[in-house]
Length: 509
Image (tube, rainbow, N blue to C red; front, side, top):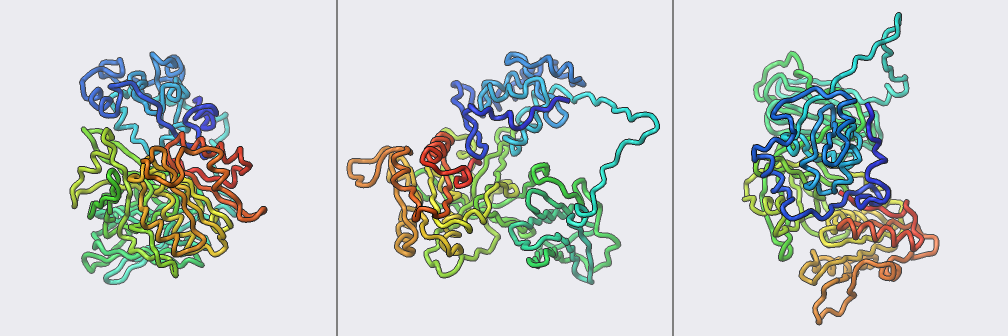
């Protein structure tokens, strides 16, 4: 079947393309919000045109439905009539048309992998793709894919052991420099899920345990030899004949992007006001979860709103900017902190704001492509943030000042509308007094008459003034995050100023 190649989406001239592959929203007509779409799906209207029937769709039939007024798209073997969704799509009609009449799975995975399309488009389901049998030549058996010896040697493996009171699962990752951020473990009811991240691949141990275990769980990591131990406490001191029943993804080693997102329920334990419209939410992970979000990576929050699952990405922050820079801060790993701007017309953020202490929300595994090594090999670090684009800079700033000794300059250029919008202003000012390497510049687009600082929006002249190498040949990393137009413009201005793509990292969750 024809599968739209991921490089075809977004188009090079599209509003959705950002330096590292971002996605932009386009203005929608009045009455075309997410809530309006949810209302339409629950109205009883026939959105498929098939009066409730599900059909088997051939490639030829799919290809016929390739116009805006008649558009079918296949995702993972299921065909959807997205014609009624055209005007509601935040990325615009043109982007949906990239996969019109074709298999858009690769396209979808590149840009929308985190979206729960089954829930969003369930009333648009036309049916399954027809499977074409593939005949093998006479006298030949279908070829089996066999890993060569070197590939097999690098594939992780596992074993398990028990005592009267404990179950220990040992995962041999065969990787040096294994650390806590590369290990994600959840034990919910009797379902154990242990995932190991190895570069762009993921190894999974996933079983329905033979017997019940307690909530307490320990994860030990031998970093130098790459061994991971998951230690569970038996609820009853009985001998287990087996670890449990293997689940679908058990003992697989595949590309990380091919692994479905996994969620766990986290409880809201506090909600603190940061500015007039921004709050710091503290979420507590389940006791039987081991999860550390790496610097520069984000998680997805999932909520059910009016019967439809809605998902949004957020970058966890620290609870505060540590001002004692003698050693890196150590947190218990049991909590996630999210700095979230509450929009008056934002369906998702309003629902977040209405959560009560003790309420639960689903949080995914971390995702993102930022690497610490990008900072560790730099001498000058520049952070360009607009509004809540400040969030990925928090951990990055702390890491740079506490753990990277080669940095000569760490400079934050923070764009906001007004003084009241500046996040953690006092903490940033105190941090600059503590470390002479750190400088900041606040730039306002709508200042009051009393504002004596810089004003304006991101521009080539502003960046040329503040983004300067400390030495002619110094190694530079420039990180940028904010609304998509801000990021796109900033990346282009930086390139015009002579900075290379390798020196620029755009956060585009």
